[in-house]
Amino acid sequence: MKAYLFPGQGSQFIGMGKNLYKNSHLARKLFQLSDEVLGFRITSIMFEGTMNILKQTKYTQLAIYIYSVIKAKISNNFEPDMVAGHSLGEFSALAAIDVFSFENGLRLVNLRASIMQEICESIHGGMAVVFGLEDSIIEEICKKDSGIIVPSNYNAPEQLVISGEYKALKRVCSSLEKIGAKRIFILPVHGAFHSPIMEPARKKLKKFINKISFQDSKCPIYQNVTAQSVIKSNDIKKNLIKQLTSPVKWKQSIENMIAHGAISFTEIGPGKILQGLIRKISRNFAKKNIKPCDHAST
Image (cartoon, rainbow, N blue to C red):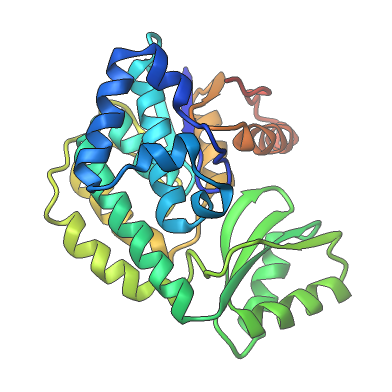
């Protein structure tokens, strides 16, 4: 079975989509539609802007969504048996398999990105990747801290992202270093994504999500919140509403996809960020005496 994966923030680059625009009539049409729906030229930022502008959350999320969905739409062999998207990538995946329209997804991502950036500017939050410790150990240290700090992205075995108030983040990182974390990397973001700090954004997003028409999925989608296979539109909608304040269960999603028959993973988006995670998850899954997929492809 073929699995298709859609990346989140971090894979953007200047010039992304320019070749698609030049070489595909459908891509050109969708890029132009994006500018019309948004009311500004996101294509100019993607094709010719500066990295300082593109890396702003309010533009990054739009750019990756547009690029990823267009790439899926113009592909002649996009016939997934299952899909998943990492954080923002879940929105790309849902548009690619027509759970909601490209335009509605664009409006939704625009709102998501804007309100997330507003919170980033008003609350001093942060995120860090912790390497070399079991999830349970990190979870326990986060629970003991007096501030708002939680596991936010279960990316791969012994690779967990934590998210929360910046002071709490620094305290927890210090504690994790003392008990043997191999490496801790503070991410270059000012927000505490997938944490309780995003609750105001979740509430605003919920209102908009409930106004959008959702269809049942053409194939199973493994959503971040549950890591389980979902097809029904109402279930997809409920999980999407919870996503901003819940951890991304990426490792668990990929393990479930493997267990349910995935034999190849294709990443659709700018870059190859997810491929390394897939290899780590697959190798670890093999140790559990269950035959996994052992490669990722583009």
